[in-house]
Length: 89
Image (cartoon, rainbow, N blue to C red; front, side, top):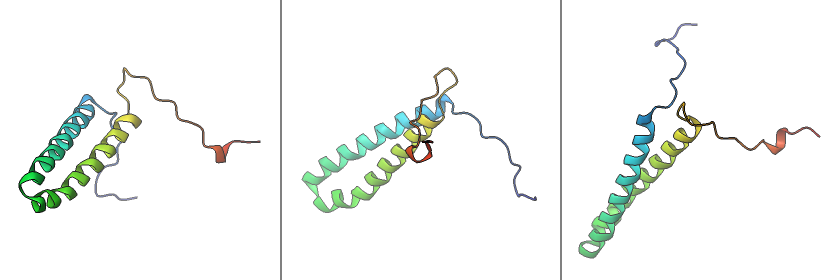
């Protein structure tokens, strides 16, 4: 099979992934604070900022899931609950 890029195993999560989560969380909090302050000055400006806050919240949740599913080597792997549809009776 021909591919445009070589296929490799993905690297395990590094500390940069966790650092990105911390940065996104802080950025989301700052954006929310800005919208709150901007609402007092200009309601339209605050309303137009809401999609950006929503996008940041989505990116934060996505990054948190990546951190959860790819633990650092010194952290134990989280135990997942078994899928009830796949249990044998």
